[in-house]
Image (tube, rainbow, N blue to C red; front, top):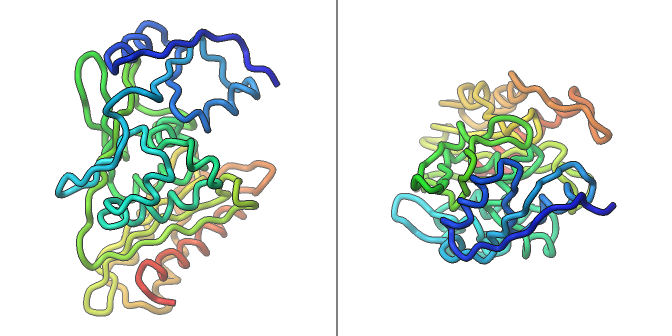
Length: 284
């Protein structure tokens, strides 16, 4: 299908790009285009203008900032997946990014674009939520930081304001003693997750001292499985872990579509959470 007509501009600075977006509430930022262009082709999005930020300086790269890893908005999935900085400081991000679609999309799609698109079936929003990441947005008024828990508002909706551009993400380093895993159930390698689970587990003295679990495609936004996180605290590895993971779907509102009904997604959430937590904890 042919997209609806739109204007196209390619600003040469971040301030000019913010001004273009602020002047037209129906304008959309374009980076890698792997999420936006399919919506245009299907006429599920009707932007009046595309503001191409794909070549703006200063928005790419991955940087070690001491207590956190900073991932530039224009860093591609492939760059993030292969980055020694990410693999050392935020391995869960690298694990999940490697599961995004296929190599062709990973070479074009951008980390920031995936978050700004805010598809609850996308892999990366849940990962950033699990790690208590912070989104950095810029506008004519300067930069502001948005905790991931406050960034995802609704289906394909974020707390970015008019004229703001996502410029990067701060991912805290969790330090020693943590294990990580991203578990995903999907029909094909290119498909969105029917359900995905991002898990980070810290073990101490043979028990789970702390766990972070976030779910993909279990509601209009990524969600933390708080009931499971609480139930896992202090639990020794064994049957009680499975029992704690049975609470993973509590408080979720999974969608119904051609691929799965809500009850099936709740079942998947419980099963995949158990797998992810056990793997993150280093238990086969």
